[in-house]
Length: 451
Figure 1 (spheres, rainbow, N blue to C red):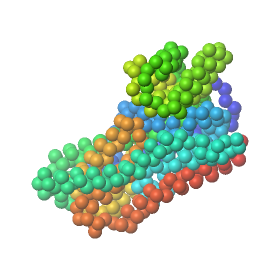
Figure 2: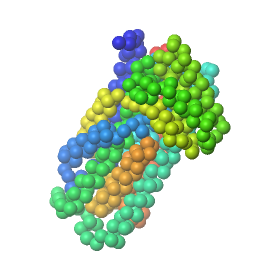
Figure 3: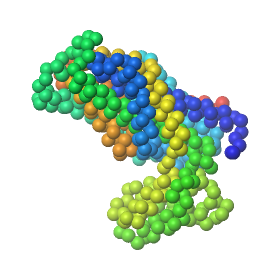
Figure 4: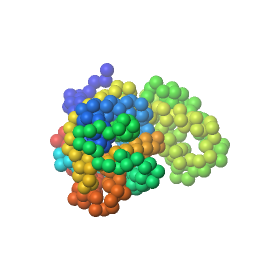
């Protein structure tokens, strides 16, 4: 068993608990995105709705893969991850978690739907910028800017998708489905017709599962980031993977295919790939360096990143690239189980504040069955598609903007409570600069206290 100094061990345990705490907060902060519609249309009572949503969130984490999780890990450059001391890495993750949890709890307290994804990304960028301010570092080098841009674009576009497509779906429903019951305010304490309850139950299930599938992976990515920077000899490489066991042969195949095939690759990417191949060959040839798994991880990550933008790959290169990725893109099963439990249990607690905002304060009229179905259908499809492409997206932003879109499609802007929308928009605008600032400041505070 790897021995750790007492201070590092304590910090590591605190950081892991904070990561689980973030996912717990994420659960009850985002619960409303799935259960508001079924509760406010009397399709389900609050307790069974929240319990079912929590279960579906857990299943989403366990069955959703790790593509989004690895996107979170890749926000911090691999060279930075392996260049950190264990204690410094733990402090960095502690700082970003402090920022994310503080902002999530603050917005939840005031009942403002706010994106946990947006919060997390801002916090990661904040600590990355802070690290790059240290002596002998280049400002901005602590962030994988291409990955940050990709994720940032998805967070910017998602509210527009929710607003536009929810409004369009409601308009189409009105045109082709003439049943007037769908468009009336639900009668107080009266269940809707069975077929309507089934539709809304299915959309609640879809959003809950998709939320776990996407947001749960962010928690998995956080825990993996902690483990990689604090215990690199154990967690930086998956020792049981084909990519690690056959690494020398895979590197040779990639080197051969790069030289002998007509690839469409930029000169800078080709230079990075060749450099990583040379470094990997050097590490593998040196018996004393072969077990430096954190160095192997960094070079594999750089090679994979360079090959990602390469076109016209041969089948041999595609297969070798896929196999070599298995060495660094993985997560232990216990991490998935822990995060799924935290998200699921969190989903069952503290949901009322934001449920009230989404159900009562976005529009001036009560949510109808058709509005609930339209908003949740668009949210579930958008989040599922984002998970398929391994891109983090905001469940909160998609659904709250979707509800606004259905209100807009019903009666225009006069049906919107502009004060609530201003609060949501302000939180959306402030999340990034506030979390960057908090994470940036707290990182230096923790360094002062513990290093």
